[in-house]
Length: 254
Ligand SMILES: Nc1ncnc2c1ncn2[C@@H]1O[C@H](COP(=O)(O)OP(=O)(O)O)[C@@H](O)[C@H]1O
Ligand SMILES: [Mg+2]
Image 1: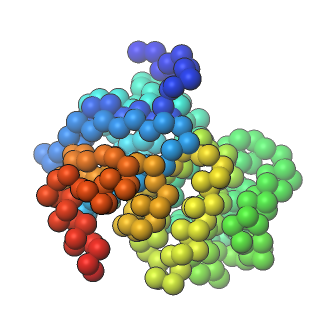
Image 2: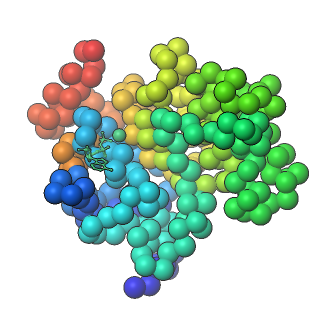
């Protein structure tokens, strides 16, 4: 199979087509299809175990698939000849665990992949890393070791590290779920700041107000299926399914 499509003006950044995935006998993705146009922000919401993490993880091949296909920027993610290192260099992935390198200072954490993977000259990579850290309000933390930072600061470093690769797509899987409540806002502000860059984003979150504010579309999943997709106003004000109504009333009345 050819692993590149000819580019077209309307080519979506992410195209998920009829994807199926099992863990053993458990069907965790049942015929999932989503088209994410360039520069759009898609929010994935739904109950625990819905398959939200699994679907976003299949997009950069952290998980395999058992059926269907996924294209990112015209590249077949699960195609037999796909260069996964090259693909992943274009996709930033931030989860709830920051996974910073504890033995490297903040600046070196951020500059490492551009130096190692993109073979950028170290001085250039460090300069760019410093500029990103500055935009995320971390200019005074560049020489600190990650363990000395708060969770919110560590997560912003993780975002900076992903951005240093100049990805075309950012995936966030519950980026604030491991944070104390008072540290959530600074991370959401960092994500909000990316909107102006026009980068395409997939965001799995339980922060409903934030999703409503920044997303172009909401994808509501339960039990491995997409039950609703639509504009945030439509979804949050007029959910179409009982499952979504139940979910929203449970999460909004916590
Ligand atoms: N590595 C795995 N092995 C087996 N089952 C898994 C694995 N990862 C996830 N699952 C199961 O797949 C389903 C979907 O999980 P997940 O995508 O993490 O859901 P969500 O992110 O919406 O909470 C759940 O039933 C979960 O227990
Ligand atoms: Mg999850």
